[in-house]
Every structure is written in C-alpha cells, then in structure tokens.
Image 1 (cartoon, helix red, strand yellow):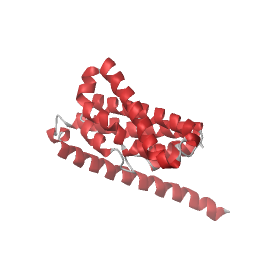
Image 2 (cartoon, helix red, strand yellow):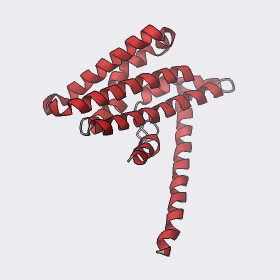
Image 3 (cartoon, helix red, strand yellow):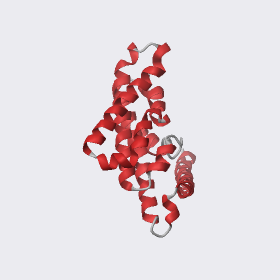
Image 4 (cartoon, one colour):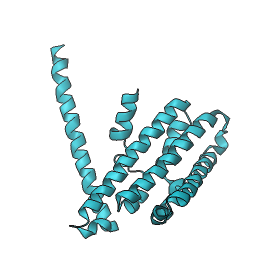
Length: 196
C-alpha cells in the first residue's frame, strides 16, 4: 500500500505536476528556493494537521455542514502556521505573506481533505496527507531552484511570464519522461506475458 501511495502522490497523480492544483502560489512564490520552501512547509503543516483532525472527526461532521467545517479546520491550521512564521521567520513571512493567507483556499488542500481525509481512517488520511505534501514540496522547491539558477542568464525567469514559460517547459519534460517510463514498463511486461 505504501508503495502505491508514494507512486501516486509523488509521481503519477502529483497534485502540482499532474492535477495542476495550487498553481497560484506555486508560480508566484517560487522565485527563490527559500520562499518556495517556506510555503511548502506551511502548506504541509496545514494539510497534515487538517487531514488528521478531519479524519478523526469525520463521523461527527454532518453532511450539511461538511464543506464549511473543512474550511474552518483548514483556516485554523493556516492561522497557526501564519503566527508561527511571523514569530520565528518574519523576514520570510514578509516575502510570502499574501500566499500564506490564501492557503485556506488552496484547491490542493481542500481536495485531499474532501477526497481522502473525510472518508478514510486516520492512518490512511495521514499517509495521504504526508505523501501529497512531499509531492507538492518537490515540485514547488524544484521549480524554485530552476528559476533561481536560470535567473542570472535569463532574468525573465523571475518574472510571472517567465514562471509560466519555465513551468510549461518543465511540465512538458515531465510528460515526456512519464511516457517513456510507461513505455519501458510495458515493453518489460509484454515478453513475460508471452512466455506464459
């Protein structure tokens, strides 16, 4: 099960690279590795905390107030994350303050809470939240690193236009690699099937 969840959340169904959720902060904050890391950690804190709490309370939440309850829990964890960052990393917080506040409306977090945490037992919800957070962080920090490294040669990399162009090229590369991996996996299994 762990292997399947890791493969799904880190690669085949990565929330940022495949489902294209949470792109607003991803494109805006990824102009440096530090900013991207700060938002990745804050988003992980909110997703993991919210998923754990919603999973524990899922049987006590009436369907009629399900969505407002999810948003309330996510907003609570977002507020805690903002207060912690203001207290211990104020300079970083000032760089990404706007995008910290809108973690509440991040489709990636609300989607995982609705699809998994509200329906699964605690361990499954926690595992999904942790692996989804790692997958999101890999894309966010990796994209931040690419933009920061290419900025000296290509100043456009730090502009919003450059962010869209670079992210589009990285997604194309991701799709190419993914299809090559699938093709190799198919070619490896076909001879075994024929032998049987």
